[in-house]
Amino acid sequence: MHNIKELKVWSKAIDLAIRIYEISAQFPSDERFGLTSQVRRCAVSISSNISEGAGRNTKGEFIQFLGIANGSSYELQTQIVIAEKLGFIDSNLSSEILKIIDELQKMNYKLQKSLMNSNH
Image (cartoon, rainbow, N blue to C red; front, top):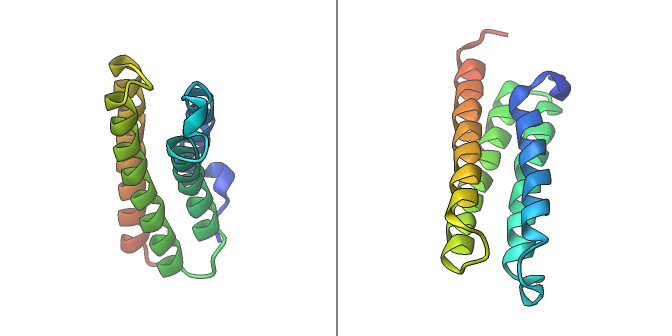
């Protein structure tokens, strides 16, 4: 078991989820059950899977949940591009969010590699 409060990737994922909620609140109201719901679920899924994996009993399970979190980050990336193309967010905001997602993906990958290479 790992202390999630010590994991920078988890903290960054929480911050991203909050930012996504703020941004998606500005999406058109008819998107409430569409893209708004999708981006929010993906953003929450990233930090949730990191924490679920951290609470599991084995390193392998943790790595597996980090992989799921990474998949959610790629899904969110796609949805942000779609939101920009639909005119729900401007290109500057899209670039900002995509940069944060990219940083999260790199942190996640490094954590996975670290877990794979550790002997305990």
